[in-house]
Image (cartoon, rainbow, N blue to C red):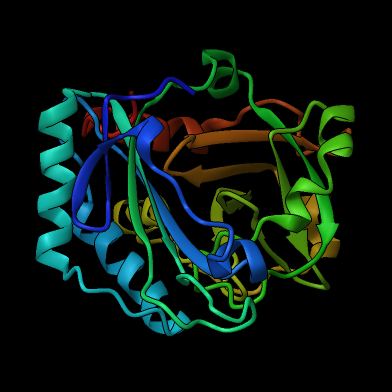
Length: 273
């Protein structure tokens, strides 16, 4: 990750190397904190209001109180973008539970950090040829909250490398989501996306708005290899075809017409670069 010049922490702009957290922060002690991630595209930040709403929704559900209101937050984002001049950069927002005097419970105010970083687009081949996933029987706790807890994905690093996979598909008897993306499936021209146990992704929201025929419903995990096409949506990967899961092909094992149509719609609006 290439670092930018200035970031934000608790009311101040600071250089990346000057941002520090004490070990007593409950994020280190109990893994308690939320985050969000979004990109600037050709100098603008599409859907910033949606990302802001999701961040503050995560904070509310987590019980984490912050002094920065929504308007002040968006001002911080624009100030960083202007200060660093990253027309195609990214912001990672991290809000920790705060410092803990007893190392068990929250006893201090939250730490609010915004990293403004360089962002590199995934390889063009991933959009053109598709990617592979692995699968894991798991549902994230409180899926509506975008937490910093990624233990389950990180423990699967060896398996991800074994299959040259970009992400993990979570499921129980129902398919839910990937660890960093929402999932879509196509059968006989109809598009489906899981309804239960998912983070309501901002890119997912745009797909649903552009293609109102998408069916939001529960999808059995036993149907996975029956679909003709599969793709994921996320802030970092936009619309990316999925051609296999753990070495087993989805459909014909190549990107189909539906993700390409959605990719084209995103490009037309300047959303996919």
